[in-house]
Length: 499
Image 1 (cartoon, rainbow, N blue to C red):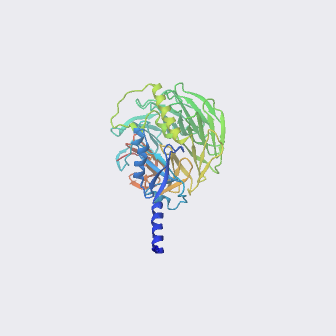
Image 2: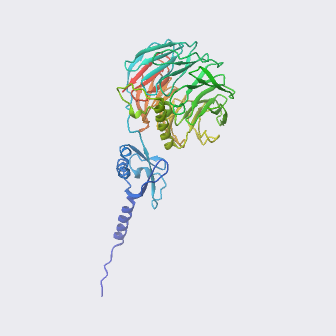
Image 3: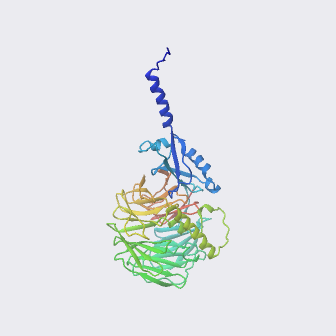
C-alpha cells in the first residue's frame, strides 16, 4: 500500500501565489515610435523598470550612433513614465495578457541652462519697450518702443549699437527675416520700414499703404524664398493684409476680406498665409496669388494670437540651435545652401509632426487646433483659461503648446492632440508673453506684475523667479543659441538675463 502524503491547503495556495506574483512582476512591452511604427520585436521587462533602464534597452535596439546618444522620454497611453512602469500603470486599465505599447520620444541632444540673473539693464528708449527680438542665430538684438525708434544692441558687450529713426509714431511690431540680414518694423501710423542691422540704416523707402496701425509682421520662410529674404507680409487694424517686395519697395498684393482689425499673421512653410482677426475668424490665403483658400470659424470672440508647429524652425531658418557656439565665425553661406539647409530642417520637423498645425488663442478664453491646409473645422478645443488668451507658442520641437492669459497663469498642452498637461501658477497679475528655450525644456513668461518667471517643463514647476523691472513687462524672447533672455517693459528698459 502506497502512502499518500497530505499537503496542507495553505501551502498549495502559497505556491500558487508565488507563481502568480512571478508572472505579475514581468510584462511584455513593444517600443513604438511617435509615428506609430514598431521597428523592434516585443520583449519582457520587470514591471518596476525605470525610464533609465528603458533607455538602456532602447539603445540596445537602435543602430544609428546619433540616435543612441540622444535622450528619450517614454509614454504609455499618453502618460509619461516618470518613476517606474508600475507607477504609471497604477491608475490605468491595462490588459496584462497582451503586449503593452511604450512610445519613445526623442528629446533635444543639447540642454539649455536656465537663466538666473540680470547681467545688463539697457537704457536708451524714451518710452515703454513694446517689443524685443533676437535674430535667427541669436547674434543680434532689436527692440521697438513708444519713442518712435528701433534700436539694435550689441550682444557681446551688451551696449547700444544703432539708433534707427524714421517712424512717426509708436513702433508696435518688429520681425527678423529668416536669413538674419534684415529687420522689418511697423508703427501706429501704418508704416513699415526695413532696416539693415549692420549699418542701422533703412533699406529703401518707407512702405506705405495701410490706413491704420500695423499689428503684425511675417516674413516668407527661407526655404520658399530660395535663400534670399525679400517678401514680408503686414497686418493692420484697417483689416487688410499686404505682401511687400522689400527690394523694389512695392506692395505685391493686398488681401482684403476681414471685416475688423487683423491681430496676428503667420506665413506657413507650405506657401499659405494665416491671418487672425477681431471679426472672430482666421483666413487662409495663398501667398503666390493672394487667393482666399478658406475661412476658419469657431471662436466666439476676437482671435488674438496664432502659432504654427513649424514656427521655430522657420524663424531660425538655416541655423540649427544645436550648432550654437560661444565664438562665431563670420563665414557667409550662399543663398542656395541656406535654402537647402532651411528646407531640410523644415522637412525634419514635418516628419515628426506629420503636417502643419495651427493653434489660435482668443478673447473667448479658449484655444483651437486646426489643420489649415486641408480642413476648415478645428479638431480640438482647448479650454481651461479663465480670461482672455494673450500669447500662445509651440515648443521648438513642435510637441508641446504653451499659452498664457490675463488669468495670471500659463498652461501646457500636447501639440498633437491639444490634451491638457499642466498649469503654471505664480504670477500675481496678467501674463503678457512667453518664450521657449531652444531645447523645449524651459519656458519664460513676462507679466504685468513686473517679473519674469522661468518654468521647467520636466518638473511642471517654477524654476526661477526673475524680479528686476520697475513696471509691467510687455515682451520677452529667448535667444535661439540659448545664451540669453531679453525682456522689455513699461519702465523703458531692456534687461538681459543669463545663467
